[in-house]
Image 1 (cartoon, rainbow, N blue to C red):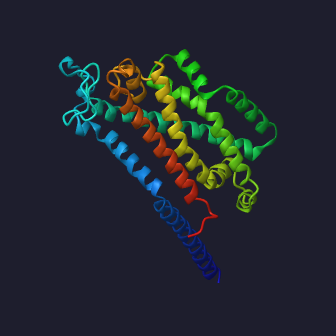
Image 2: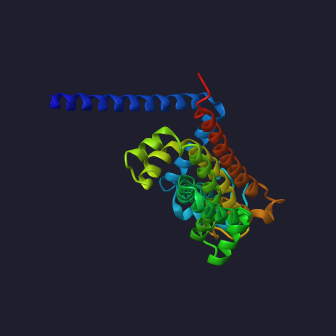
Image 3: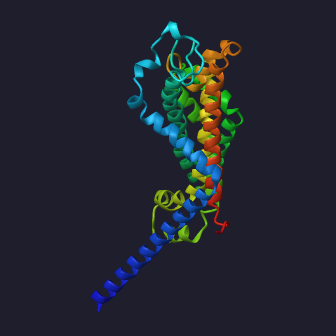
Length: 304
């Protein structure tokens, strides 16, 4: 009898797992289907896929030496079939520099958002879960940092560490953590008293296990949406800092730094500034539109 009872219990657990998996798979399919119905999201994904693929396969498509190779004989040439985006003041192909520069801009945006969301997310989840004095201390420290504009805070960190890719990522990560902390805290506050969290507590699961296994996975919806849109803001901030000379330094290609190098030719050769500027705007807009599409697709109130 005990053996039969064990088998029936095991079968019931397997059925519950299969049902949960089926529901999760169905929900993912519904989100994907709603996202594909949004034309702006589809166009944004297509554009971002092109940018990401160019960044990944840049070394396969072009010789990396062409990024810094100078040729005064073809300097300041307008766009043509040979040089799609023209050449800059040193005779370097702008299109090739834009392709390799996409690596820098995307890496800065994605890495900064990932690190700041992990640190800020954990702080926000801990603050919301435990509450009390710990919540008050974390939030007051967050308020102190949020009182300083993000760009100004990033400028101070870069000025202290020196202009480089590493200092730029550290600076923007420090500036982005407070906002991500508040986002996750507000999301977790709506989850911390739910039945499945109470059940996990009753089962004897440790607090850290509840936060990692129960609370954070159920907070991923708004986190993914905000992260997608946050990458766009971080890329714009990185380009702004590089334009001011506080980010990526020449001759390394970075979209903001390329605009800074070409600003003295804005009247005579405007394409040198306009083309990188358009790419920055389109990339940031694509991330924002994709974030809007994900937000709408993940809204449980929407029905087919």
